[in-house]
Image 1 (cartoon, one colour):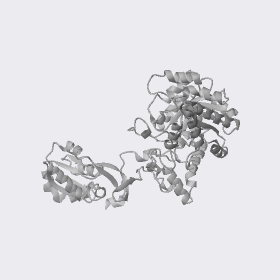
Image 2: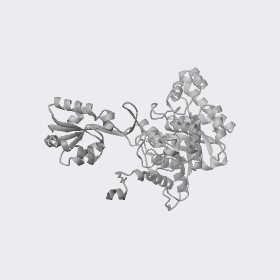
Image 3: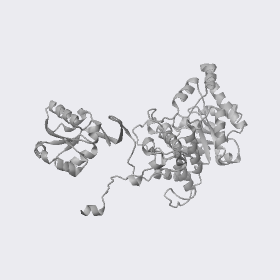
Image 4: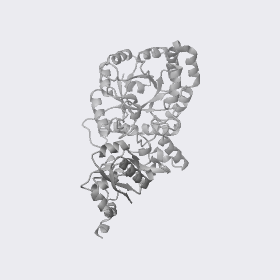
Length: 293
Length: 222
């Protein structure tokens, strides 16, 4: 079953993230693809994540297809104008890529080419509209396409954003612009997430909760201080601290698994998106502990 | 106004090292307010150049250095000083420099400043950028705060995921303009303005180089 069919069938979907490497040595990445193949429903292929230049998302999506892993093409508006974005959307589609995640993209100042010109000719909401138009046979300028796309398009949302109201307004704009599924920024407070879901459930879209594995109390504190829209509650930090250095990662995997299990058992959302950030090989262990394998 | 910043003197010196005599042109408008092209700065550069063994044939502060014809007329009494100089140094913005290039077709023109942005002066000599001169104003829909300028990504439909407790992901010194817009629209009971989806910007409106004829045909005849 395709990722789209799985989500639409009501089955709890699981996606994970593959970050293309910087350079042509792709052995480790292919190894991660092999580990994830057959276990997850689709793999997000990041697009120069954190504005750090790497192998292009489209190229790695094509590799994922060849390796039997259904890709979700992450597409940011940072590096291409509307002509480039549309050309790549057509190009990706004819290569067999069926899912696209539309995002604005981290600013170049976060990355490793700080002197680059940030593009942002369009942004996430407008990119979603572009995809919707192309699915209906038109480009952004209203010209007819010789053959339309049939993308399953998604977007991102940050449920822990503060203040939340502007974020929710943008979320609604993305729904109206045609987003069919959402993958959220990492969430750690399930009760708070339920409040977001109560709002999101008004709309006919699928929501996948973002899961970022905590490796240590230090990492949790770092994210609280430096990563926008992420709030790790103190009780989880205490739990990681109590586990001690050697057991911290294992505890982090348990926390992720516990959250996933609760999200699924209580039918809080439609799936999870696991961002392992360099620990893709641990994704099967998390899924196993969550009772998904 | 146009914000300008003085270049490092050694960089200016490197550019003008082949020449001996200089005529300095400041400006009474923005460059005076920025402290880059007013009377004190004209006097300072004159003194520094003379210390380096150069000759300054004259100094002049234009009323509005970007007005080509007006500045040309104002410069008439300085003909003698100008005849004696190798080079004109302009101490205003890039527009002032290029006005001088038009006025002095036969002389090299150098500039002592870098031109930064269209500026609001919030306090004495403290400037910030609020307008990008994009040619398609949306201030009426955004509570009078321009996201094209105040958001590093120029987002038109609300904050990105990088908004951080009211601050911008690019720097904690920047307030997220979409949070500011939200707060202001909330205060003036116009939150519905924020719910409208804005189409992608028409960048053809700011295709360079831009030109404008603001006077009517009738005025032209007069």
